[in-house]
Image (cartoon, rainbow, N blue to C red; front, side):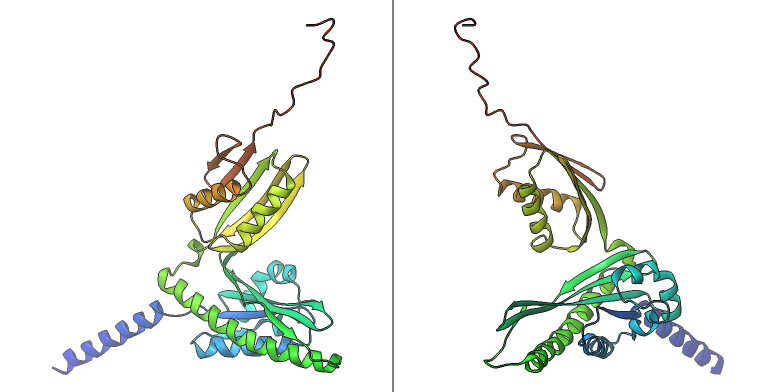
Length: 286
């Protein structure tokens, strides 16, 4: 009987351990870019918020200082193997404070974030806080303005930590393999005007659901290309792209052709034949 009880206890322990392992949350290293005085406040607020949600979150900036005098984006990605090893973390949370002065009486402040998978070398998700407009009262000196901005930054950082925790929990419940969360697509266009490209890219960043990151944007003559990271599917992207082009009065198979192959999109606009040609010499050639 005792042997049977021992076996039951061991099975319960194993099942409990497996359940904990299955539901284990990823460990995180939090990096805050820039030399702003609010860097430390952002780091503390976001890490504290993530820890309250059950994540093991560490200050990545402390480790980055050991190998670099700068805390820019490229340094983090370039040294991701070393940093993930010394921090013993699965994901990097890379934050950036955006403080844009509107005029002498107001500033626009928000915090953006990217989550980078150190094992698969891709971006899991991204998030940004709403834009906060900070209004400065009359006769507010530089100390006063910095204080008001710092107060808003702390509130935004706490909000961002809660949002990131929710996103990571959702992603963790949907799939335990972070490799499948982010997808990479290569876009290339030919004979599409730059104004149309700027409009389309703006929509892809600010309005397409699932947007994570856009990089490698280049233009050579009549060709433009960019790399697009998203959680959305190919079919959805194609549908949204057709809608976006339609808003520029460009219609599929009439004004352009769209070729989709694997993770590659190619947009080719047809040449316009609006000219009637030269008048020539009607006296001689009529």
